[in-house]
Length: 300
Image (cartoon, rainbow, N blue to C red; front, side, top):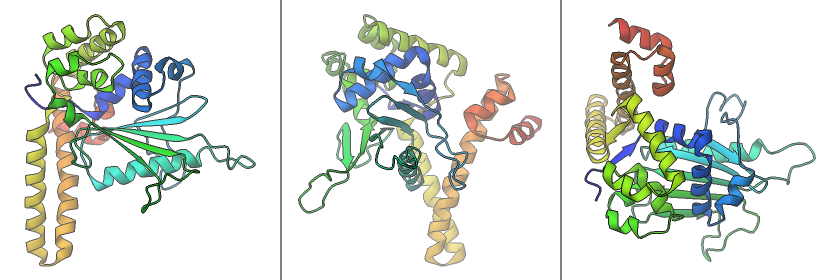
């Protein structure tokens, strides 16, 4: 049984899925989501440049993971929080992945785009493990024949409610079985579940190596974190709304609260990494702070 709703932060999961030695695990996840043979996915899987575009509005923005084979382009996004900003960001990635395939004379030779969102929340709050969204006609619910975009949202919250025995009885190709490793915090249970599977054994060892280096820095308590964040944003929004006395104040307060909460979390992680004598470049990679900000934090 998962005793705490604990999830790996997006940077850690992304690092794991990008690892060359875990390419078979990545292919297994894609295969399970799309219900196709993972060996076929793995056969010609290619990791692409994660910079979405050189467009002035999207320059320097990077997706978490992009891979492709001869049939499709797959974008995987790890989403810690359910915010409008993150949803719009993911939508823009889909648009850019279509545009980057468009060349003169080949306007219609575009591979289908599959975006797999691994969410630490239930996007539609229907208590489903996975949601599949496509472009369709509203009244008759008919999928457009020319649509080449498929969106999948995986609800990791769902896995935290499952008993270990429920997972143990699943097929090793089942997506729940493959992803349970991200929510199970009991090392003994994880070993019992995955020790006979060479691929998952490898993934587990990779996770252990990462955890030895970063200790508990890349974990957070999902329920406590979410509750604290919501309360902080609510108070900030109310405070600013009262000061300005207008409805716009609520919107600005919420936006400011989100920005401040995110910055404080990054600074807190940077402090912990500095205490472990990590170099500035490593800290920058895992916090997105500038070198100048880290140096100022170190000097304070």
